[in-house]
Amino acid sequence: MEFGESESPLVVTGLGHVDQGPTGALCDPQPYLRNPKLRKFMGLQDELAIVAAGLAVEQAHLNDVPRDRIGLYWTTGYVPFERDDLKSLAEAATDESSGELSMKALSTVGYHAINGLLTFRCLPNMPVFHISMNLNLQGPYYVSYPGPGQWYVAFQRACDALHSGTIDVALIGGVADQRNALVQHHFSRLQHPPAGDTLRNAAGCFVMERQLSAARRDCTPRAILDGVSVAYRPFDPFHTECEPSEEFSTGIAPEMLLTLGPASLAIALSQVAGTIRGQFRHQISTRDGFQAESTWRLP
View 1 (tube, helix red, strand yellow):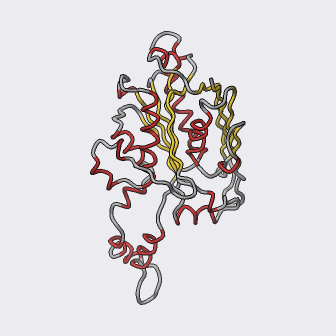
View 2: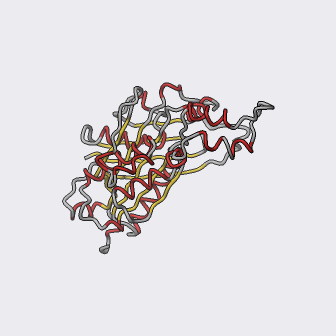
């Protein structure tokens, strides 16, 4: 890294997102898979993530960047599980004589009542595995879970790694598989739940690098980071729950708020970059105590 480059502004050079909307539009990861047979190990969150990351990498033109100089910073939403699979597991894990849950039945008969590949498809670190393997990313990585507060922690770590010269390029993103029984049940139990029909399956990713590095590659910035702040306010979760809020300064429809989890900012940048100019701001206050903000310039 050249002298002074650590102070170079951080810019976004690639954006990609998938938003299935309320109807669950199809998502095809096939173009980004090095081995198509491995798709059987992929859940919906993995498919959404690899498509969003693949689109961002294509736009940033990273072919000439050494793969060990590209870091991956990702946040995966709440663990998904479909109702039919939950029902099969519950029925097989029930003791026939008492009609109650049996740990013995769960660990023997119940375990075999569902497809064993489901464990691969639900793990929060699997989207990062599929992205790194299929896009051949060999630099450092950071995985967090499950919401926009944790996403901002991952984002800040990526910015620190870029400024320190640990990496030259960062892929930063999040994915949320939310239109399933387990995640919707989780949100329904909270004090400030979003409406169940507003939760969407989505992933968003952007490529960030130092402006001087982007200029050497003749890559035009899509957005320029002016500042980011992340704070945590301790609270007792057994007595209170923070009311969540999310605000975009301009250009984002109100119905998008609070429905995309850790994918929201990346998707918002994808929507406004190239369509509006000037400052763009994102602010969140999360139900688990995070308060974060980022400001951007859109050229």
